[in-house]
Length: 451
Image (tube, rainbow, N blue to C red):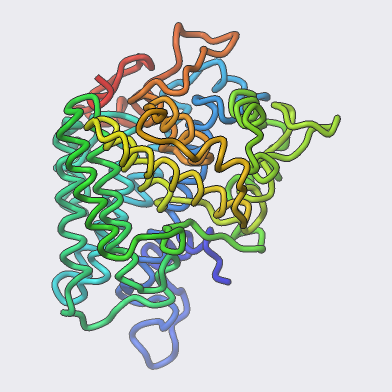
């Protein structure tokens, strides 16, 4: 098992440090290569992306959507919506300094000679840029990531343009991944799919569907049609089960831990399961609840208990892009287009796939009760409520709630503002050092796709 979490630190060391003692008779130390390889760049980029999608940004989203409960210290502040520009400085820097810059470095280095590396890097760039714009709205893009030629004062691009660029980046990635023009190709250095470009292509199409669907408030029918087109491409490419999901992977060593497990090891009690999610799952006898949550001191599932073993063990994989998400997007898109039969079928398939993926088996009674919808019974509320359950641990839950306001959530008692936040504030480092920064401190101000 590779040291996933610290691989980025090793990569950084290769970039910025050298060996003090050179081998006698040689001009270059073998321990300090002049150029970083595509493989090392790729592994480091993936580790950073794991951290972005499964670390603090995922926990923030979980608390704000009441899937988790903030109990102590900064997580109690988060539950009270006390989020300042300094609170999220590290997260902003992590997306740009560790992820987007690394993605662009790999894109540039791979070039036309190693298109599979470039294609994977483009997918990872789209994912990290998507996360940034989902959390902050307008963010640097067109003037950013230019290496030594970059300005410290990069303009903030409008979110509408960023979403369009994400789609183009994914189109370019798919073209690269379909190419046979490569000198070297990824293997074990691809921590996600070990160089299987067919799986990267499938997941890139699902990401296209995700960001088409993101525009449901701006263009309900157009976004639905675009999402279904991308999903059909994914299915035709072979994305027909949980087996091709994109997951963040972790290990049993301390520097490889699953980020939820590591957090609970270091900060036990800071964050627990959310009563909204636990009560919802309890009310429908959801078979995934014992996998999602542990029990409290009284032997019950409650907001006094922590995350369960399925997502919260040391080496538990965590979902990034999944077949279950694809089926829920399909259900929502068909519902918006008035295709009740298709919406019901996709909704039912999503629930069954997630239950089997989590518990390891079908549950006939639960499927009869919750996954047997038809044209007369299906509704957007049912689709989005079940997606809320299925997407536990993923930042996507907050984006979905902002688009649909499903499930209905009541602001936490003790909240400092009159509503649940719909964005993060501009990072302090941008306000202080970027003269072109678009500074926003109002947590209730919707991002463009949320209007």
